[in-house]
Length: 514
Image (tube, rainbow, N blue to C red; front, side):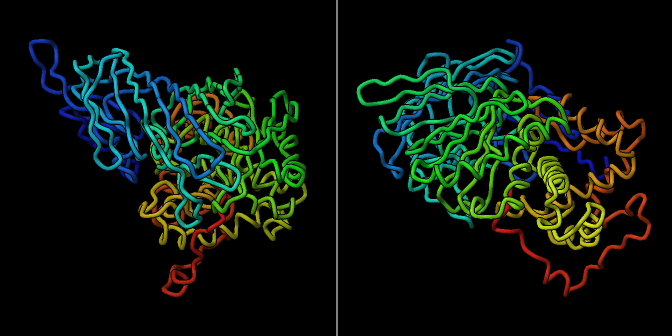
């Protein structure tokens, strides 16, 4: 299908035909018993992260328990997880992603199961094969994980700070904390149970449903009822406080910050109370139960849209409000674009970052901060400057929907999925008109709410809503090596790629707002 790729991926003895997010499973060899059980694949075949995620099952829910025995951010944490899933083939064995320290025991449907580890694969063999289309549970008990110090050059999933630990799992680090199917294609609901010493606070995604003290420990339970990609989990445990701001646009808002920095940080996060109703006015109802900001005293190198509780380090909060507030709006926009509607594969990350960048710039404009933030007084001039760099960005990083590689996190989260993704949206707006463009935006977050969706899905939806066949237009913008002409702006030009421009093109910022 041209630049919208068709992929054949082996899944045990089955074959998956994947065409931009539509998956058809052709069964393996049949047997007299109705189909031989075969191993689930050790990866989902993601173009950028082939071994991330696992085949053969679809997770429905995680029941995750984590224990923090002492007030020590560097301590090893222990846990248990019960995963409820549905087999998508007759399974003789299956994998979970896990890069932590150790595993105690594994059961499948309450029966002890054999397991081995190979790299970040936890390979599980149940006593009896699991029939296709049937629900099963796997419990991994006594697993252990140790947090790593934050490093802006190589962000770690399970991170320690002076005040406690947090999770920064995007794109492929969450499984360093707990066993999971660590790919955004397999979203699931979560119950998260945190046990920590009295005096520390445990916070996680979603709504707190209970909290009790027992024998010097606090047990807090959180529930996220909306399906969540594993890379978006947040578990913040330490000497933090939780501050209830009330409601903004009907959405309960709570912030989590280090206790010792609360007086300095909390006032700077207050603009979220304006951002939530503003964003709802753009694309519709907020998709989750609550929202808030988590600030940590560490060097991450990015801000991150962990579901219902966006993560920032203190560097962001050292910046003027005309910088911090648009970036906060970017992370909020991700709750719709990237969280509620997750990418089908990591090549689709432009959908996350292009949309969040679009609303970041709009928020800067509409709050009177665009010139201070970007150096431009209007969005047309800003996008003209981005357009001029189009061929350079494509040459260095690949087209917006097809990053060249994933050797480092910055290869994937590169300028051509941020500004390059936003310029695709600007081109779409110019092509279909602003009214149709706004309809497309609302239809996207409505149709694919709580789901994972592909670039092909976006192209089809935009074509349907606009009443135009946009396949060729958007395929060129998203996959071509050269920047297409900008509709309505025939005078706009692209700077040619030369050895000089290629060598001077800025590398991805070590301060990205993912």
